[in-house]
Length: 272
Image 1 (cartoon, rainbow, N blue to C red):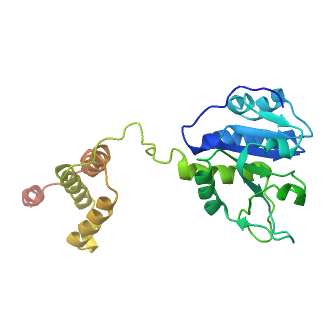
Image 2 (image 1 turned 120 degrees about the vertical axis):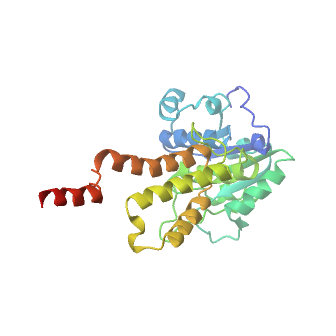
Image 3 (image 1 turned 180 degrees about the vertical axis):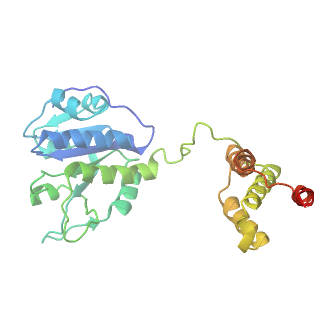
């Protein structure tokens, strides 16, 4: 094993989770695994007898692979890679003939978080073509099977890593971060601003004779229901009000006004 720098810390149980790739065959899958790990805040990776390995090539494939590569460990045996683990999860795409302690990702990741309080928890993934053999599975306390379509059970290695790391992040990661808002998001519209908007829309709809074959009160109540459900902010309510007013403004600018009725009568009288 080569000495490495300490991995980044997340300040939670993810710091004590290590991903172990046993005899990977394709360097691209190592890179994909690293990308999945960093996305979910898991930074400890151990490789057991990889067929090919190149930090330079991996860095070119996996965006921002440094945090994992700097602390990555390469081991000569699975026993060596798991020697400090207090709990080991193996992965499999199918049930084996031997009796095993199987589980689904959600239930097992919850237990992983609890077990991580005692030390390192390892998740072991096998080689791409045949997964973990029985000897490797014998080293695992539990076996996780990711639910898939029964006709297509095999997952890409990086995909399987991403599923389990995502489940872990949902238990202990940064799940409380506020969802992004638009750069121009503003406070919620007040009642007065909402009434101003409804009045403008009503005025615009009258100008285009929208209510000619409809009951205005019922239509406006439906509009109120829809827009109230949308929980508009101040900017959004102003935009909709502007639409209502602009309908009338456009008509004033582009639609000729009909001649006054009195002038037409006076004109006919003069001709006679």
